[in-house]
Length: 234
Image 1: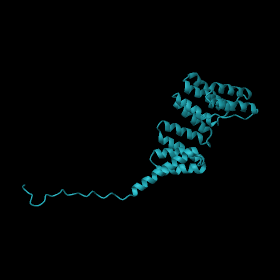
Image 2: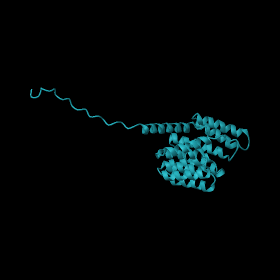
Image 3: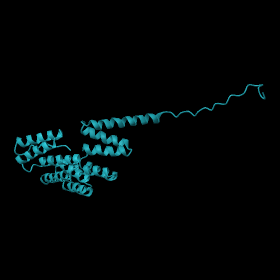
Image 4: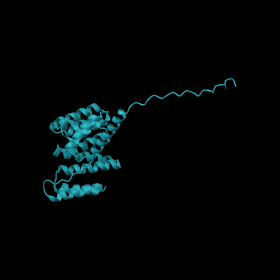
């Protein structure tokens, strides 16, 4: 989960508190991070980014320490964030992850579908639905959701990379390379994707070289040695 620095509205003090909270979170000081985010919220009540930051911090604590109260608090802050900004993609994603972690898969799918219906021109809900379907082994549904995402935004790098990964896993390297190549053309600053593409290209080249080798000649049978003449019967 990536926290955000909220800077809108009433000036620099809230942004400073959020930035300090993000720094403390990255250091593993979650109590300090919560305190900083609460200070930011006091100076700028209702800021959705700050609600998200609080939710993400409690979510991380729940993962590390297994405290149910932290999980509930995280969900509470995620809902507060989305009530104020339904378009908050990081929060939509984080809430879906939390629901899946609690084995509330139907709620996660329902939430993401509601997001997709409310924002038909946004490919992000379909990308998250594809991720969820893939995690549950429903590869055809994952591919359908990614195709829907690309119908909305044909040059979406996340959707292209995800579709390339699906097709690579399905044994379709040519299509995977096409998807990875389009993603890199849109956003060249993706070293992991460039590495995947280079590895796949090398594998393809090795396969072509092997296929082009001439067949090995059949082994030649060697006759057993014969006894010299005149030695028979001795």
